[in-house]
Image 1 (cartoon, rainbow, N blue to C red):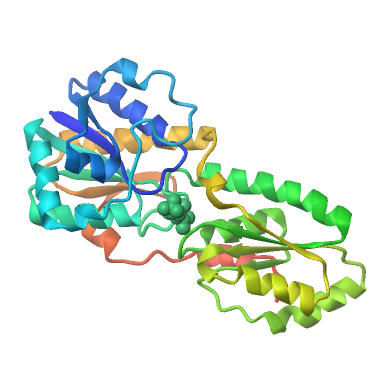
Image 2 (image 1 turned 180 degrees about the horizontal axis):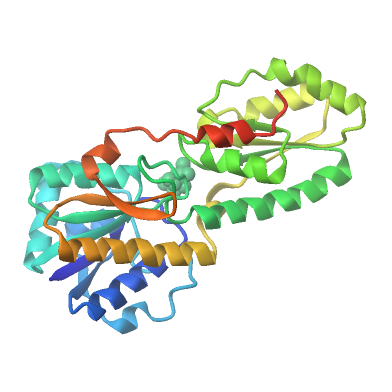
Length: 319
Ligand code: F6P
């Protein structure tokens, strides 16, 4: 079989480990691996290359993706999807592994409605917001990047008697914020999934400050759009000297953790095994309770991921 791999949407640490495994494992199985460069944009423009071992040598430890990625507006137009399909046909590619998030899977779902393609999605996004899987590739590294930043912010916050509002990524999902708040012991955590009324914690926070609390750490998920409001509230209502840190794209980069390298390998092996063994088309590899499985693309894109209630219960915030 001719199999191709592509990265799409926001990059995530561990993509390179997956791409390396894709090439090495495809050769081991006697299949022909191809690389699609620049994501969906590259698929439209035919940026496809037959892979060699040397293409993926020495990339395991690097963040980002050596085959790059893109967010494609053109792919929403039928003509460009047709062009992408013709490119796959040109190389006789009969199996495509797509490392991407929700948006990329929606695009692939659309693609599969128009053309007889056969792809397997590997959930890859730091947001951990894909339905049907407990884990998306890149999340562990992103959480560790955030933890490292929060530990450092804690040092300066506690030295200066200050409040810090730290905004973390996650799009509409509060997973990164919730886990980071739990593991850093933040006093406040705002996520899009939970209604949050600042005055309800005001009294409790003021009492704590009266009893000797000298710093406050507030983690705000970008999806709440409340970073500025929380900072103003801490200054004006709580009376604390406040600073804001927006962690931004540093959360997407960096050396992948051991866990993300291993997950990159495992997701990819499952994707290739499925493409080689089964006639069932257009699936997503998922990971739940330590086991890998497969879900239909339709199921994945037509359901909304929910934050684990157990994590919500563990949020040690003032409320
Ligand atoms: O989906 C990953 C993510 O990093 C989100 O957390 C964030 O909202 C978005 O991508 C940023 O996208 P871009 O890199 O296009 O600015």
